[in-house]
Image (tube, rainbow, N blue to C red; front, side, top):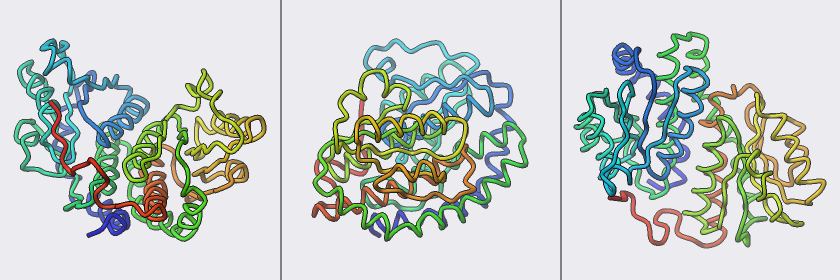
Length: 343
């Protein structure tokens, strides 16, 4: 199966997760209701999923979420104290030794532990008290696509269960249809990719829930197209980095309707009017899309809190098509392997 086919599998993967994972998430929820904080270890794409959890569990569940620095555990031998925390490992393969070391320490300190993985028989899954199998199926392409959105869905389902929010659960059930809708932008995205075939540098902007999307889009551009793509919060970007934007400089942005939309719109307006930036914008707001040289339409009724699960899909397609027009290997980018073991 190719990367392109795996991108298109995502509506079905989301639907399967919603059907099969509710029971295990209810079981996890019943045990961790009394936790006071969350400590997450992850690398690469899974680290970007952890960023989503930081915002979602923080905003919707009022939980302090800390992202681990595994080097403290395995290189310095000086782990922080974690009492009262749920210790979470997020990894597609569940094999990386440094993520495992964080889970081992959670067990040693008597913390409840959770593995979010695509391999329920992996070392990480065998170590954790609870396992959330994201059920994405075999993902052969090196660049993660369906495993990432499946991880995000698992994080979203846990949030809803912890809060007991039936209205938000109903919104989750709309995800497969929203993903199908956004894939209808395929031809538009393919045409847009032709414009960026010679791109060497860009920045990717997001904020709030879609801060994670900025990081994941930039990672897809780096690993598939070899472009130097730097992710920023739209707020951080104004504290210095905006100075590098000259006429024609490519800026990618994720700006759906929601709490941070006014700030995103203001920054994008400034980039167009004062810096003459080349804007590619993923949004479901007409005002933002009108600023873009290359607009990509999200379904209008996409709720902000689950928009990262949908907004990354056109970004994946765009990265795939840019790699194709550059004549690059979309399945096995140079220097990369599917499973990366870091210590």
